[in-house]
Amino acid sequence: MAKHKVHYEFPMHCLSEILYEYLATAEGLSEWFADEVTEKGDDFFLAGVEALQKRPL
Image (cartoon, rainbow, N blue to C red; front, side, top):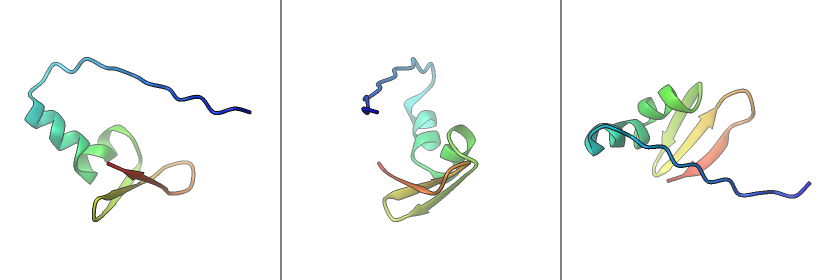
């Protein structure tokens, strides 16, 4: 099965400072994307149904 890159765009109607807190902190990411997020340096590890996945920012 071939991999396909998917690109999503979502309009955000809020201040950039507020959005940054959700996307640049482990607590903010855990509210949106994963059950548990662990931050180690510049890397975030998302834990959910599948195994831990490393996601660089």
